[in-house]
Image 1 (cartoon, protein in one colour):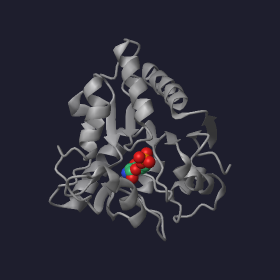
Image 2: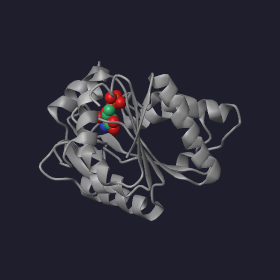
Image 3: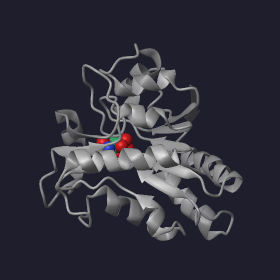
Length: 239
Ligand code: GLP
């Protein structure tokens, strides 16, 4: 696990975007796994800059997002579909038909998860971006007694509901979501994690120095051969 510590999230975003763009330039039809939350925003902002200045094109990439809330209309301002379009997809030349999301409004969640797993297995994710929950979650894989495998429907933990409900000012925050499982994430060829701010310092410490345990789902990344952890000074406070 490579750990890089940056003075601030702006520097982090610039450096990671440069690396991600170099991956796309080397392989224009790259498959990305994308993450939501505040952490990747500086990276997405810089990817947009790279595209707008003509240094990279995303027209042949495929994307899979990690997770999506259940029972929230796709065009709700808090859906991850909306988040990704507003913060990245609407500003670059990725093709809409190459953008993949779990459908949190599917009639049959098992079927929907299976559909997504098959697509991911078929394409294979080259580069997966990850944020980190304060409780050590990745995607929406919450602390639990055993590691998860493929995509599944999850009941969100109190910690996650408390952290994410600040974004829900009109409607109550959903308590369920669909997420890629831990094994789905671990199958990615290369993983970039972004964690910034003091609220992540315990999860970062546990992920890097703790036992590999489903109580800190991100600790499983210790077993992946190609993980880059990008954090700021605040998130690095306990290292
Ligand atoms: C949500 C997402 C995660 C994300 C996490 C951290 O729970 N499902 O994928 O990593 O939030 O979000 P933030 O970066 O806003 O702290």
